[in-house]
Image (tube, rainbow, N blue to C red; front, side, top):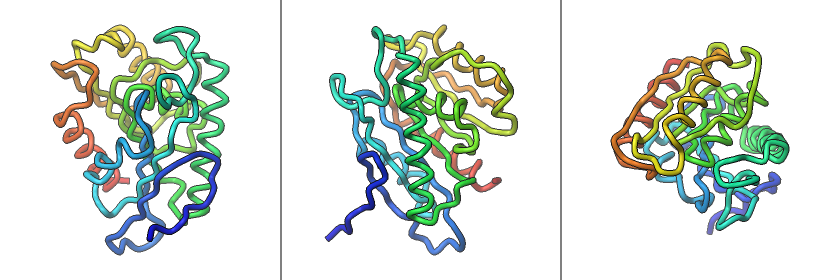
Length: 214
């Protein structure tokens, strides 16, 4: 029987690190795309390895399935709502680190689509929450000024034929992160908006390397 998880303010799944790593474990925060749920990216997290904990919250906005923030129109975030939602997400991560004895300085994000845009917003609004991470098919969440991400690394991947997030949209989020001081490894793919095995393999391998160096 699966033990009941503590109430952290959001619906979520949690998988502890299980390879006997000493000390507080590092964590991969999994943020699904629109219409996904807290189980959608667990196989991706499992590909990173058993030495990390997996924390996967469900988006608490219902719009054709779960998502992490409201939109004023397709492709345009409700910025006020987005700021409020990432405040909630930052509190959720902090509660999880306390509840599960996780290393709060070693939380890495894997975000896809709506979850990737949310991850970018979380990094900018709460730079102490994330060590860095993977953003696939993200768009710029809002304008931001200030070098708040100095020393943080991000893997940014995008499909050239993506019909939901344009190349220009994706270049905007990359420029936003670079301006904020982040170190970016940029990957382009021939496909569209879908999350592919190639993206997952390259992104999880990058995460493994980054987490080993940290």
